[in-house]
Structures are given as structure tokens and as C-alpha cells.
Image 1: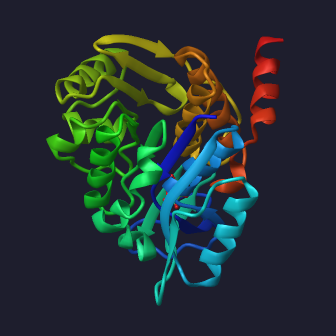
Image 2: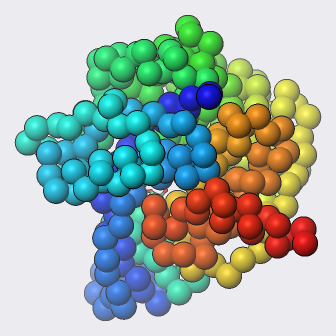
Length: 307
Ligand code: RIB
């Protein structure tokens, strides 16, 4: 069975449900508060595993209760956790997430143990990357570790997929080692300078990313679907319309589910449809990992669309 290596963050998400986001200087009463397992790396690993992929996760947790509980939960999802390091005297990463009545979010993150995923730490897990078919990464852990992982993958013919979230500028050397990039509109603007308001903008932005050496560009546009560009040939894929409760981890669910389907042998268009369905289902529920569907749920949803 083909293997996915995910490298990235683990966070305990503090969810604050509000009617609207607070203004600067304003104190606002919260309607509901709870904690949920999150972190972009962890969400993508969970989405891939629940979609059926053999998933190995390279990450760091703190030696606290939250870290231990999340490790147990990953194992229950069938994720290989042997390359997750527990960092002594350190807290697990955390995020504060405001979710408004429309299901939109504002997120603040504190790295904690995620900040320990250095180039050296990544190097110590070289064999996990070298033996994987695909390496999936995001940008909530130190950039030097992401760069090192991409180099190891390139040297071992492991395909490199980067979800460049949260948005930040990236060195050209890293982009030249990426096979597939999956930015949203905000990340695309930061990487290319082009505001994506329509398919034409997406096409132009994708072509800029191709000039950086990335052969496959997948720009996600929320409820407006996505733009796939392969070596300059672009196509739009509309999304599914669902009642939105919380968009947290929708992009992560898309990335993890997409990788799982590709590894299972689906062609690109079928894998995209599966991943879009998984992401759509995730926005109908609150929270990050609490909202990520199992493969059977995604297939049942897709059946309803066609039936
Ligand atoms: O993409 C959603 C994730 O972003 C949340 O789970 C939060 O932890 C932040 O990392």
C-alpha cells in the first residue's frame, strides 16, 4: 500500500463561538467555548487517515495532557505516530479560534512544541520521508524544517505537496522543490501579488507559480470551488453547496482527502471531487478534527449528489 508522510503542526484549538467578531478594543461575550484537537498538520494527517491512506506523521507535541490525548487519538485514527517527538518541559501548540454566526473564523496560533520541528529534527526522520510516496506539508512549523524535508523528498523521488498555510513569503529554492502547491486566495495573493477574484485571476496567478518551478497548482476558492493548473493548462471545478457551520479545517480536510484518493489510485478529477466533498462535509460541523469525515461518509454524500 502506498504511504503518505505528513509533516506539520499539532494544536489544541480553543473554540470561541460568537455572533460576530470583536472590534479592536471591544470586550465581547462568548456564546460557547470548548477545546478541540487541531493544527494544520494534524488535521491533514487525520483527514488522510480517515479517507483510507496509510499515514505517517512527523510532528512534535509537548509533554502535557493535551499532547498525550492527541497522540492517543491519532493512533485510534490509524496514524503511525512513531515519528512524533514528545518535547520535554514544553507545551503542545495551541490556537484560539473565533467562529462567527456565518461560520467564518479568525485564528491566532502559538507554536509551543511545533517550534521544535527544526531541520535537525526533520533529518532524524529522513527514512519516513524517503520511503513515502507523497510528502504533505504546511507552514505552521519552522521553515527550515520544511525546506529540509523537501530536499530529502526530492533526493528520494517522494512527491512534495505544499499547502502554503498560513500565508507567508517563500524562498524560490523551496518552491523549486515543490511538485504540487495548494494555496487559497490569500496565500496566492501573497505568493504572486495577484488578487484572485475570478477564474481569470486564478489562471494568471497559477502561471506565475509555474514560473517558480511548481508544475501543479491548485488554488482553492472556498465555496467558489477551485482552479487546477497543470503545466499551464487550467480548469475550474465548482464546489458543493452545504449549510456552513464552521469553515475551520475545511482546507486541511481537502488536502488530506485529496492525497488519500490519489494514493489509492484515483485519477486527479475523481480525487478532487472526493476531496471537495470531504471539505464540504467538514464545514457542516463545528471544530477541526471533530468535523473531518470518514471515507464512508464522503462516499455516501457523493452518492446523494449523483443519485
Ligand atoms: O486550519 C485550521 C487549523 O489552523 C486549526 O485547527 C488551528 O489549529 C490552526 O492551526
